[in-house]
Image 1 (cartoon, rainbow over the protein chains, first blue to last red):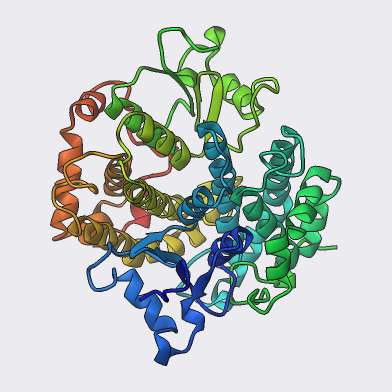
Image 2 (cartoon, one colour; image 1 turned 45 degrees about the horizontal axis):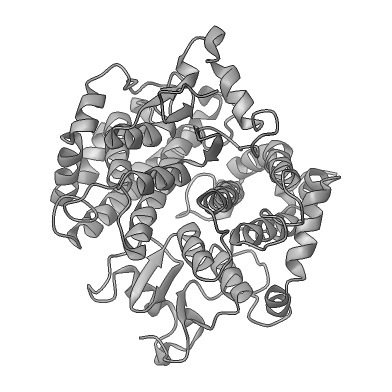
Length: 248
Length: 248
């Protein structure tokens, strides 16, 4: 299944950043080689069919997964975004060294994911099986709470965590997948809720320093400048619907 | 801060099972000694004040945490439920041995938490800062989707994962914190949505076998029979509001 020259195969929706982006950023920061298989042509094993096959367990060779992203490595599959990032982080020196560091990084990653789920639910508060247009009233109410109270609370928290360390990153001078997660969250919030983000991030200097430092990491910088980075759009988690942002 | 004779101090809301229950179950299955500090009297350092202090980082000795549960051990604190359970699982032989097993167990735990968040949001689809009564219409719509489509999907997934192994547990014969998480999810769904649960779990034999096997584990059984197990109630994540369950 996996090309001999690549270490990893990522299975994720081809048109969005979504949760897969946390895995992509970790792979890119690690300088790992990977296939982003669903972005390849269907007649070469790519497309949505590849995702369906891996979720079902690759013909019984692997346990099923609930949802993408899934990462395949050495014939084994790993699912759940934070779990994949932890796996990669350990293999590539992006997860800390002591048990304490490992769990501190993971704690931040999981907190980012909590915020991510809330950000998603601003446009789909009722059901992912219904259109945004059919849940717009609930979306406005949920988004108001999110931008007014939750964004400031989450951002303030991450800034306070950074205040506990020396250096721009969660572990000080050493980049971890937790930093990549915070970075991606900031990018997404800034895209979807520019007014809410600006107010929430205002004067959070440690957070601004992290965002800048991550963006300048060689692997990350090259990735962000490449066409491998899918632009934010209104099919992903972070959608820019101006009516859901903070009012002026 | 920590009593000399206990290994761990858990900081979690005293009146509910909530997310803290996944930690309590792991501690109990491990046979560990712990203080459930917020259930102790305020004048002995307990109550909600203890939670506030640990979230703020115990006077700067530890990084802040976003929300309870928090576990304190050897002067260090760990937050995020799945992260705490992974930490405990490794220390007490409840997390698998190979890297592959470790990440498979964690994958299941995180999938349980996704379902848990959705279960919570059935009664609070708009905002945790508003009463259920003020978001009842949205709650009914979200709950309908959850009981009709999401419960069967999640339960079918966990049953399929169990079908991949021999023995009642995710790793076969060896209990892990992932099994405890699935067990707690089943207990909670059965309490909150008895009709939806019954239909969703119907004929899922591997799942039924796991639920039974976990409940018979000595540490778990003793815990469930004790007054340390707080009963389900309508302040926690799993709330029995009949109007949100499947109709007959």
